[in-house]
Image 1 (tube, rainbow, N blue to C red):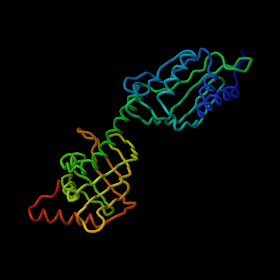
Image 2 (image 1 turned 45 degrees about the horizontal axis):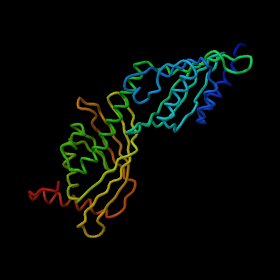
Image 3 (image 1 turned 45 degrees about the vertical axis):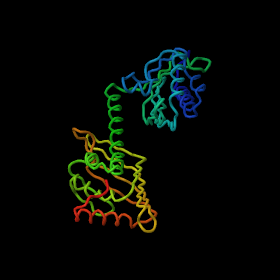
Image 4 (image 1 turned 180 degrees about the vertical axis):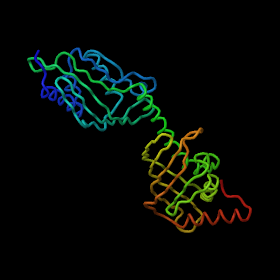
Length: 304
C-alpha cells in the first residue's frame, strides 16, 4: 500500500460522485472497498420509516443491500456535488440531493443538503483499499428538527388548501378557524386589517354561486420559528348557470400567506391574492355580491 495524495483522493471521490450523478450504481459501488464502513445517518424513529436505508453498515455487501432499498423506494430528481475539500486521504463533500420517496400509499419529496466525509487508501495497483467511509453527520437533534419541520410544512399546506375547500363547501365556521383572530387581507388593492369573522362574512357571497372550486397547488414554504411564509398557485372556478351570458368565470393567480403557530396549530394572519389571468364572465362576482347584499338587507338567507 502506498500513501494517498490529495490528487488520488480527489480522483476516487470524483469517480464516486460522478457515478452517483449518472445514476450508475455499479460504477459507484466499484469505488468502495470490501470492508467499507458506511455511516448514512443514524436510524431515527419516524424518519427511518420514510427513509429506511439510514443507518450504519460495514462491508460492500451490506452497502449493496442499502442501495437496493434506495433504488426501490426513491427516484432521484436532482443530485449535485456543490463542493469538495480534500486533505491527504480524507475528503469532505457538500452535496445537494432532491428525490421522490415512493411508498405504497403516497409519495414524499426529500430535498436535502448534506455533508459527506470520506477516507481513502490507494493500493499500489491504483484501486481503493482499506476503508472508504461516507458519513451523513446529522445529530439526533438535527433529525428531530427535520421531522418536525416536515410536519409543520404539511400542516401549513393543509391549512392553505382548507381555506379554498371550506369556502367551496360553504363551511364558514371551519373556514374562520383557518385564520388568526385578526387578519391582514389584500385582493389586489390596499391591504385591510379585519377580524376573521369579518373576513368570512365578506366571502359569504360565494354562496350565491351554484358551485365554486379552488385548486391550490405548488406550495412553497419558508419556516422562521413560530412564523412562516407560504406561496401557492390557485385556479378558481365560479359557476352561476342562471346568469345571462357565459355562466362561468375562471381565474388564476398567486396566494401569499403569512402564518403563525398557535396552540391550535398553524393559522393564517396575512393573505394576499394576485390575479394573473381570467376568462369567462367577469361580471359574475359583482352579481353574486349584489345578490348577497340584497338578501342580507332583506332579511333573507344566501345559499349555503
